[in-house]
Image 1 (tube, rainbow over the protein chains, first blue to last red):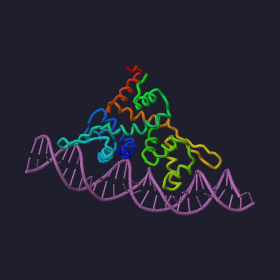
Image 2 (image 1 turned 180 degrees about the horizontal axis):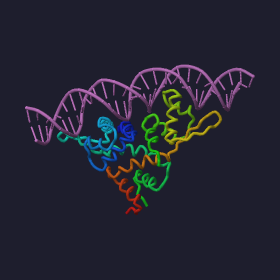
Image 3 (image 1 turned 90 degrees about the vertical axis):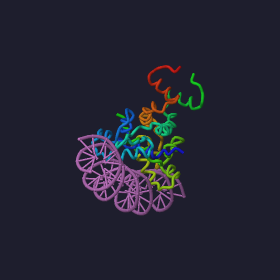
Length: 107
Length: 107
DNA sequence: TTGACATAATACCATATGGTATCCCATAAA
DNA sequence: TTTATGGGATACCATATGGTATTATGTCAA
């Protein structure tokens, strides 16, 4: 069972979504991430913990630094959950997606 | 500017996500939705208000009933926001999506 | 070894959140 | 015209959330 809740929870805060965008460009230490925001490093750290709980980022220690990296894979279940509703906002991508999910071949 | 925040906020609660699923099957009155959960009608009503603030549902009055209906269109910006990261979890759908977004033709 | 520094951990605070209970209003039905 | 019923509004409560300040810890460098 993919635990959707921690991921959805993590995505609910705009600062955390911004952090994910940052990390999509490059891995960053806690200090580097904190440098991008006005709030204290402690506050940013809390956000990083919540992102980690949602499995949206991974951390590794390098000496006295902690490097945060994006784990985009964990966004997949969220993407799919929302994708369930794509049948209600029909467009070409949606049609293609359904086709692929049914194992059919696009014309 | 598409206000993502109210939608992301609305999606952060599991009860609200369940409500969206329910409404994807059929429109429902407040009482009908409340009948699907253990909590009080007032609690469900609060969730419906938050979903409305996220523009994820629409309501219309019919006599003394209020009918709630899904507005899946509002999920589109959320889907797209997450879709930005699809380049990091490569699979065939992802590749196709990129191709389409670039206006190219799938092979 | 000692000092500086990147983090982590903790305590604390104000506000948001998810829930209940209660009361009120409008409308359908007797 | 009552009465019951679907729904909205309000007050209240416990806990979660997003933030600060402060203290402690491990590691790099002089």
